[in-house]
Length: 325
Image 1 (cartoon, rainbow, N blue to C red):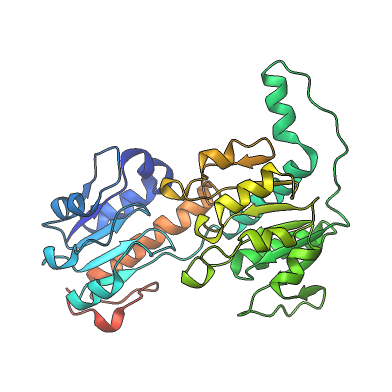
Image 2 (cartoon, one colour; image 1 turned 180 degrees about the vertical axis):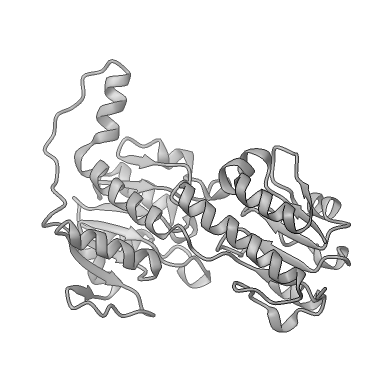
């Protein structure tokens, strides 16, 4: 079996790792993408013309009519949860299996949310930048997390983990999610409008899809309290960035923390990230050794199953898989 690992060298180092690479090489003949930028559709077709399985990073395109052009391809294995840039219907029509990774980054992202809350409340990044620029930092009254109120939008795996951490810190927890109901009596299940009105910290963890596009728009931001902070650890698609920028510039909310945005690779938009009341990180919520090892090693197990002709855990269109080994 021939496998193409699409991660560029830096991505491969950070998001795949040597252990999983060696595991993949023990199963199949592996070709590595040597370019410094992710493969677009045409580049992927050229690189994968002779391979059986593609193991793809989150940036590699799975659209653009690639599947009819790759008659030898048996499976497209995504080393990420998000498969929105894979044309699953086209893969199914061609008989190609598509798989996704499970969210091994849950603790990492939840912990970053807590870190963002501390930083926003106590001005850690702002004071550090001032000291490093030889400026005198502004001394201002901070906010204690204990006794404050967090509103979690989206009660999936990360939302649940964050709720546990927040409760341990003495934070009152509210959740807005039409598809999930907390079974913990200490967690209030509320409508989104009520969450926005009451929360001191609004943490966006909802799934990105057509229904949640621009979920946080001008009207939603207008409901937030002027001292409240907005935190996005989901996807930039959920936020109307022009509305968020206006709310921040006009001090209608106190600040924001962003690990994602509408810039390439789902990075925070530089214009937003550069605002004085914003802290931002370059989409590193899940970038810890444990999280990366979880997803990369899962692709190795998926490839092992595919080679045996078995649909692995994480397959999304197994019923249409006709190009079995």
